[in-house]
Image 1 (cartoon, rainbow, N blue to C red):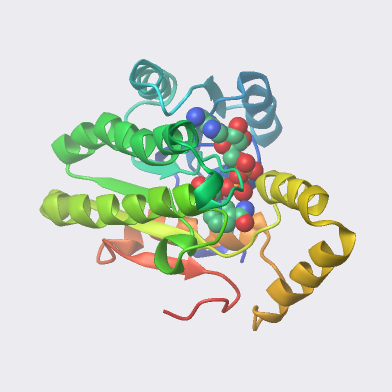
Image 2 (cartoon, protein in one colour):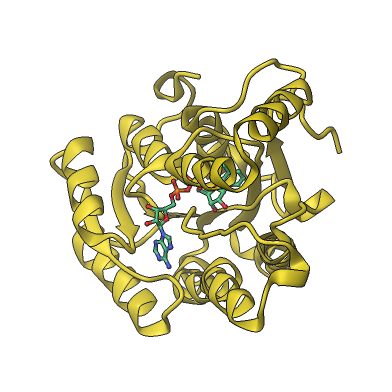
Amino acid sequence: MDVRRAFDFTGRNALITGAARGIGFACAKALSDSGARVALADMNGEAVAASARELSSTAVGLAADIGDAQSVAAMVEGAKRELGEIDIFVNCAAITHDNLFLESGPEDWERILRVDLFGAMLCLKAVLPDMVRRGYGRVVYLASDSALIGQARLSYYAAAKGGVVALIKSVAQEVGKDGVTLNVVSPGATNTPLRAQRETALRAQLGEERFLARERKILARYPVGRLGQPDDIAGAVAFLSAEQSSWVTGQVLSVNGGFLMA
Ligand SMILES: NC(=O)c1ccc[n+]([C@@H]2O[C@H](COP(=O)([O-])OP(=O)(O)OC[C@H]3O[C@@H](n4cnc5c(N)ncnc54)[C@H](O)[C@@H]3O)[C@@H](O)[C@H]2O)c1
């Protein structure tokens, strides 16, 4: 999708987390290419600075840990200082790690939920008041189809993403009248560094034969016949970030090559 022709974000400021790479970077690029001024935030400060430089001379890179309240406050202040008021907030930052539920411990749950759910809430707390005060805002959170149907070996991740969906729907009901929309994009398997890392770990765990059989089985469940690319997801995020989507709120848009038709 060529979003430059579909949407015009000129005059809009966007903050995107998890934007050093993968889907977050693709979202930042889509918004920036269509006229928005963008701030890219990521735990990996060096990588996000390089990604911002790669995007445009006006893009800003911010080091931030979304699981930490002080860091989130500094991230939002930094974005406002560099860009001005934030019109669009996209939360892509997340972590994951494969493990069976019975083998997971409370420390795994704490580590994943701190970023994927608590961090999601912290960001919303930080960006929403200004949007409500100004009477305009577009918020898009990345979840996962695992939030809707569960996923073996990723119970904490699926639980966190289910929480994100419930959070976004709840808050969408509270601030709809204030001109702020909140929606979720739920990607199917998308080729990003996150997925590549998972696959490498699984390959080592399962062995070559079982791993390849699993890959074939996964692909067979995608009616479109391929896995996703970050740009596939960025197009949907751009749509939900646009002024034109003012009557779309509290929705979960699965972008998944038909993997799940809910
Ligand atoms: N790739 C997939 O197949 C897939 C499928 C479903 C959902 N998703 C979701 O899409 C989003 C983006 O995924 P991706 O595949 O591009 O991931 P990725 O790992 O390639 O990129 C995530 C980025 O988030 C950053 N990050 C991690 N923890 C952070 C923290 N505490 N604070 C700030 N930044 C942090 C990482 O440094 C990284 O740059 C995530 O929310 C993920 O759960 C991805």
